[in-house]
Amino acid sequence: MAHPLIPQITDIANPLAAELGLEVVAIVFHTHERPPSLRVDIRNPNADTGLQDCERMSRALDAALDAAEAIPFAYALEVSSPGTSRELTTDREFNAFGGFAVQVTTTEPVDNKTEWQGQLIRRDETAIYLSQKGRTVTIPRAVVGKVSLDDNG
Image 1 (cartoon, rainbow, N blue to C red):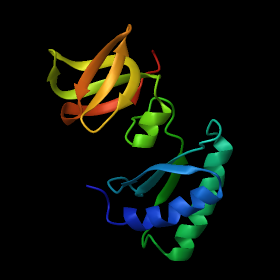
Image 2 (cartoon, rainbow, N blue to C red; image 1 turned 90 degrees about the vertical axis):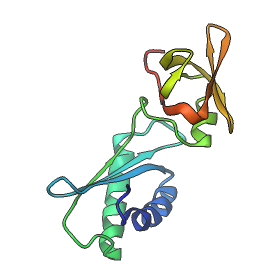
Image 3 (spheres, rainbow, N blue to C red; image 1 turned 30 degrees about the horizontal axis):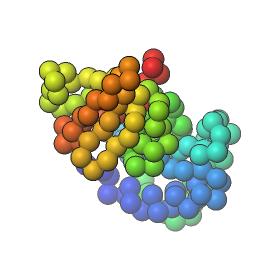
């Protein structure tokens, strides 16, 4: 379950990222850590996400969260890039990474397998389609647990 402050933090982070030419990919609050850590993953849609992008977003978000008094306790802010081995979750990501090598993990076996590698063809309402050596494999979305870019592909 997401931390109850995540929606408010998202409302602050998204416009800031847009002003900086960035996108917020994920926000996670690790409250079990001391001090709690707020991790914000960003990406630069126009270039490789670099350390400068993370630093600019960190400074802007830190100031905005302080000004809004959004988090009423001490915490550590971490802004980073999710990297290339990240999970694909949005339609936009599935469209952007069509043709890329991916790894699909299913929650139950499909053709006696729970892990699949191949080139991402597309995702629709019912399935994810992969190309494996020119052959199309259809994996029902209902059993898909995770789809990640595959650095080894």
